Length: 309
Image 1 (cartoon, one colour):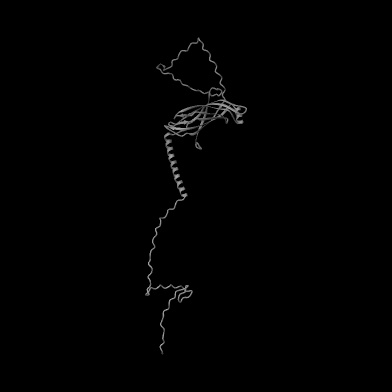
Image 2: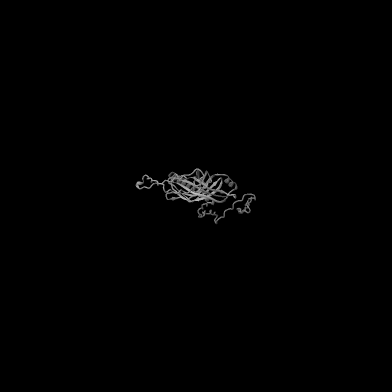
């Protein structure tokens, strides 16, 4: 048999994949990776070196700012704590003051009153005059009271019948002071019903109100004055009759023997006699020259800002 000549064997040339189709692959087959590029001499290039990225310096994280609501809550909390502390300290100071001084309010009483005049005209115009005596007692042993001018007003059967002012004074500790004053009204117009009641009655139910600014003193310390109102009720008075003029004294007789001098005890040693003055009040309102004693108890009310105690 004759020899058959064969051609030289050749390697298939690789074809790059185009549109996802490689050598010997259909359109639906998976794409094949492209062969690495060859170096001269048929060597495969080494993989690329790993170079770490430089670390960038970042600024420190900022703290979140507090909102306005947070600041308001903190301020309210601190203010509450401060107020609670002040109240606690004030309570301690008040307790110490009460234990050391044992303060008590003064007491007042209308001890006498004279309705010198009370006239109501047909046109319901009131004219009056009232003379009164008020006794003030200070029961404290270490606390004195300083009174400003006292404004006193009186009412009879519910109608205002007079007002007056008494000068202020200093009320020492443990002292009893007698206050004498007068109140009047001149042609003051009143309600017709009250005017008719005043004309028809001989004895009138009286009440009095006295307002003053009062402060206390302890040694050299003087407090700020506060408003005090004294309310007196539960006494009555009638219009006093005019006092007749005194009768002239009879002329002394010439033949009357002079009385022998009476020698009092203790004069021999150069001591002068002590005189004791006593004031008596009549229980009848018919005597215009004397005051009518009353048993009117008074209540003291202290006003601080808008609160009354």
